Length: 300
Image (cartoon, rainbow, N blue to C red; front, side):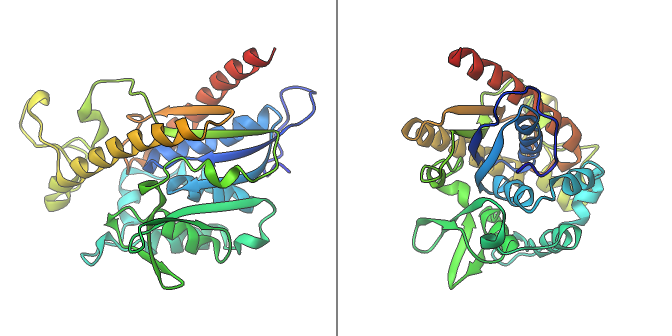
């Protein structure tokens, strides 16, 4: 059943889909627009799997609380994002407890097996070097494990396993959904082709960055022309991760081809630009409309 009760765009029979939501930091807010547009056009999401930000949006949707989260995240300002960060230097830069507790207070929690649709959060067992599909237990424990970007978030332990970001091995988790009954399998990749060549737009500009060492960590070098900008440590790390993730996504999707792939440009936003929520949600809607038009044309 739809969680936001949209009005379908047509009177055609509603078809069920299994939906794979990819990893990509703040770009994952586009998943909200994707889901809303799919529902508006009459599709029923019967199963969902996500890596990292895809696991978070997918889990919140499965709880039926996506409108609550959307309204909250669309109100976040630049420094509201920083206030949600609990810094540490043990196992990563960020503990991750503050943001998870904030979300628990905002929308509650649930056990995955009690959700009204099949849900899988994908994580990586860093010690055993294998992909993990989390399909039982506390929802936000699974989400916390799936979003644990190495060196950024502290790893999260479940059942004695140290788990980190699912995107390390499966950025667009189509594979957990192959077993699900659905009319179609759709996937959303946040690693689509770039659309602009302005690297300075993909990090916090020097005037927007936090003061002191945080500014040096996040921002490009100051007082240099754009072509000479040197990325901060975090910007360089996320750029490297994006490159690896993009190539891995292409390989995995070539092996497990979904019925429809919706692509969000990988340069649509920097990892931490959650204050651009409204813009990214609308981008998700737009890309979904375009992808569905092509999909429908091939079926006519």
